[in-house]
Length: 513
Image 1 (cartoon, helix red, strand yellow):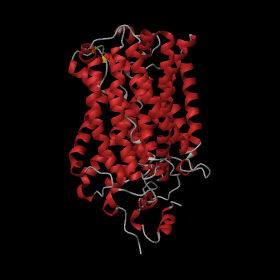
Image 2 (tube, rainbow, N blue to C red):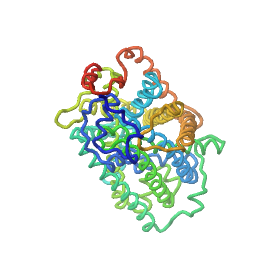
Image 3 (cartoon, one colour):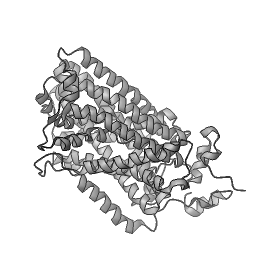
Image 4 (tube, one colour):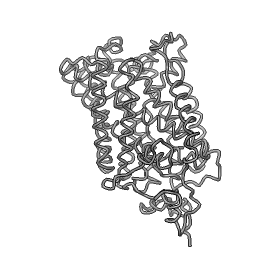
């Protein structure tokens, strides 16, 4: 006799024993093939590492200095973080119901149908691959700045690309050893980030003789965008925070490798956001109080404004040490992003959505890691960053691919969950009566920031100053539409209606085994 399907109603006290997760995955249509060796802290750690305030805040700090300055950076971080927390809570609720590596696209497929899943998957995938490129290229830029301070090395586009490729190779190799090492590195990353923020802020508070006033930090508005409307400039300035708060879907993508994933993955998403929110505010405030020369920081010869703050405040030796702390944090971040993106490649291939799916869904019998998916993720990330050899705006374009893909993909499952109403069978982690108001706030905010992502950020608009997010979004949608007509006959998530006593036969019929 078939067992009753899993739901929150037959999970006592809303808690799911770890062994039930394998059963739940089979109910969702998949045979467990990945190693479930990650705990709740490790799941939180991967999203926290991908958000990486020591990567996002530091890399985009110069952008914030130009688009509104300290006032917009600090207040914008506080406000954007709150709205992102709404997105995270709404997404966590859906993740609890559908804890699979496919995450966002699987949720959209189940709640809205194949086309919803298809486009969500492509947006999410291109966003994740763009994130690897953006994070690791940012780490390469910071590494170049460190080498400049330490040995007088002059970074060029070619040398930065070589450093970038070396970082990608390092992350590929680390991810091939299995999820246990990934989890260990992410756990170390959490403490490295928190200790790093504390160290940077403490040193900047104690060592420099001069600090900016509270009025400067929280009220100074600076506009170097070329636009005259301060409200427009302030809105664009919000993107520093919104760019940084990306990647928390990593907890969902690693759910098939997480114990008690129906609860742990949902909690991982929410915790990674609010911890990053608090720590990021402290970091931004610490840096801004320590600005010695505003114009000099903006036009730093290192090419990295935070490095100039450290250099002006602490001298060369202190700046080198703290810059190294930041670079290691960025390396943790990139490694976590490769893990998340490779699981998305694996899951999307498992449902025959990618060219060569039969190869990309293979899993190592020794490490239970999707090895081909790891290599595909880093190779595509490398290709996405190649234009930086010829254009100074290419890094911004890669960042645009990241955020314009991932952020709308967060809202689609939430919107479809709202549309489903009572048909949605919630998991053990849910928002109760707050589900609908939290969900609608999340959807409206994503719609607003998606428009912001596409607006021109500086004037006059030229080839070098153009915001390429619109082109990135169009390219993703065109690519997805073209490939839909090739793969629509083979793409599809499994039919879960067969779950029961003859589940193994149903798996064979569906081609899962």
